[in-house]
Image 1 (cartoon, rainbow, N blue to C red):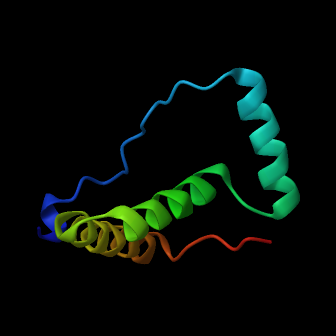
Image 2 (spheres, one colour; image 1 turned 90 degrees about the vertical axis):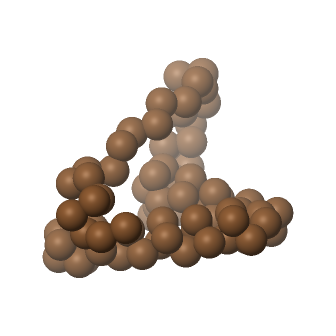
Length: 81
């Protein structure tokens, strides 16, 4: 995949979650200095590394490259502070 093939933004993925759980998760992430997105991405990475097959791990590597490319275009990942 070339840079021209990568869409300019990361697509959103709606999930079904009770609003009160989402709110509580947001408060917990805030107290921990995390974003919900970053925390969910870290969880997904962990699951793929623990249980993924060769294709899953290759896709994870491609996804990490895509994220790094996006961050480079935007000036890097925002600070956690």
